[in-house]
Image 1 (cartoon, helix red, strand yellow):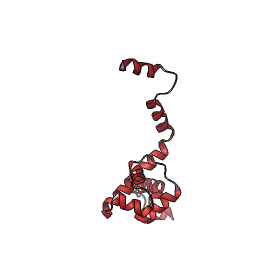
Image 2 (cartoon, rainbow, N blue to C red; image 1 turned 180 degrees about the horizontal axis):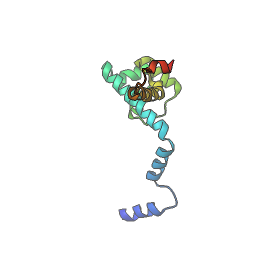
Image 3 (cartoon, rainbow, N blue to C red; image 1 turned 90 degrees about the vertical axis):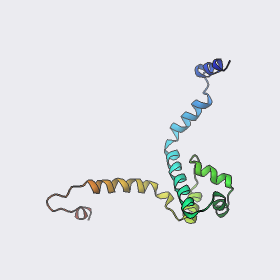
Image 4 (spheres, helix red, strand yellow; image 1 turned 120 degrees about the horizontal axis):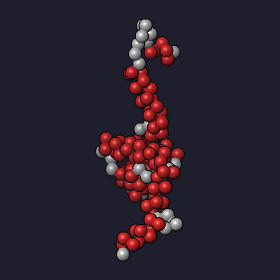
Length: 125
C-alpha cells in the first residue's frame, strides 16, 4: 500500500511535500546560504562566550525557541534582528558579502607575482 501511495505521489499533477520543499530551496538558495553562515557565526560566538541560547534569547527579548530557529540556519532574518545580534554578540554578521569578496581579494594578492620591482601596494594606490 505504501509503494502505491509513493507511485501516485510521483505521477500526481500536484506537488508533493518533497517537491515543494525542493522548489523552495532552489528559489531561496541565496538567503538560505547566508542564513546558515549567520547561524554558524552565532553558534561560534555563543561557544566562545560560554553563553547559552537561553541567555541570548533574554538579551534579544525573544523566546529560546526563536534563537533555536535562527541557529538551525533556515530562518529569514529581519534587519532589526541582525543589528541586535551584531551589537549583543559583537560580531560582523552583516559583513558576509564583504568577507567573502575580501577573501577573494586576499587570495588574488597572495597569488600575485611581483614582476619588474612593481609592488602590489603601488598598484592599489
